[in-house]
Image (cartoon, rainbow, N blue to C red; front, side, top):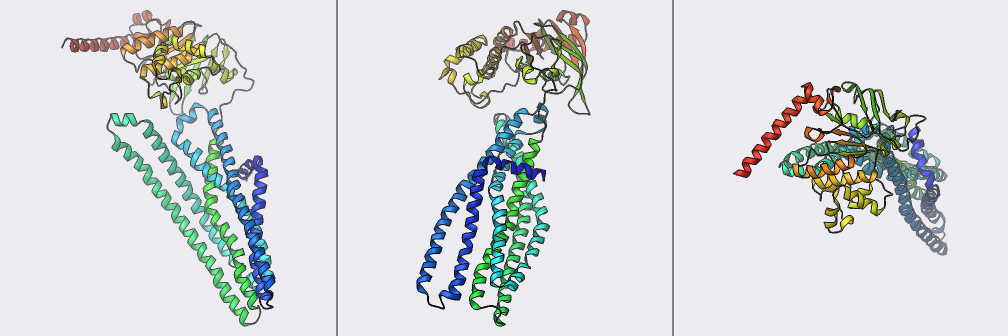
Length: 586
């Protein structure tokens, strides 16, 4: 009942069009009754009495009504479907808005392709239900009542005999509808799996080609494709059982009329004219009953889609703590006080972490993969809720500040850069949408990418392709740095910002990053320890704990984990340089 109320609420903005659509549908249904009424009058009166003038007038009158019915049906098909489209668009808008408010954890557990399936396939079926649902239920119900009364006016007992078949139809519908619902739900999930596989494969097509793994991708896709075949087989089997059974019962209606009407004629309980009119008119009663029965398929499709829509809409959004305030412009003094965090109840990621990062200083996080470095970077902008402890900026708990205002003060440069399929200018402007052209150019210059942009065919208007596919790794990175320059945050997070670059490109990027870090509190996550030797403070994190902390020289003097990591990396770098030297000599 609650879901039904939520579904009906989407009709409110379309109430005028909805009323007109229902009115037009009702008129179409009423006009449909005219033909059997006129037929009965002709058979019982006009034809026996040879009233040819009235026969012609009645025929032309029916033709005129059919012309009106044609225009009404055009309105229903056109404007009625547009009403469904408007409702679909409103749902899509609400889902997109809601998706924008969901926390990181939601996207950790939901594949993009499956989300897209809910926004496209599911909403399309909801749109069809929104248009045809009220029309089928309301108009068919009214038509059944009116036609039943009319048939009773012809012959009550014959009508009641026919009506006795209706409970059998209802029984079949009740018995088979659950099977159809389950089959359609499975079908929805299988389509979502295909979409997720397709999105993943297309996004990673370059990796697939690089490793010659097209067969593997086909295998993964075919798994979902076969599941889809099985799901559709189940749904079509349920549909087949449903439709064949209901069609049989519909045919029974006509057999009952044939036998019952014949017996009534034999006993002179009905005239031939009334019997002929009854045979012509019975479709008025049977057709809407059949429509309601067949409507179950569309209802199951739409209802399943709406349930999946509500699953997304009922996901809890990111919500600021009650009383949270806009923090304005922060200075950048960061404190982690006894912070613990786990992505799930089984495995902790951070274990009582304490950090004190002085305003304007560069603080580096190093250590083995999976130790919790990136988690620290994700907790600071409040992407995840802290398990225990507190994170303070300028002495104030980040939970007492609005998330929007905290993130406004933090700039992030990551290893995996996401660029939109838009122009260079639009991608830089993402840092601050109200920036002027001069500010965009200045940001690009400070990121050492302005000269390259000016060499592009259309300069700042050049389209860079999906995820910046037309740019090199270094160019993408510098574009992301320009974006942060434009944002001009007090706090900067560099999460493996140069780890995927070659040495030459890294030098250029590092120059831009050094410029970006000036005057900002900076947290650097790095595997390449040579890049953070000049950090004011370095923390070694392993298994969610800070095991060592200090400057580079202090940590080297400890001769602990940092020293081992540094010496190991220094040895690997030396061997790499020796190999390059040998190649150059050779």
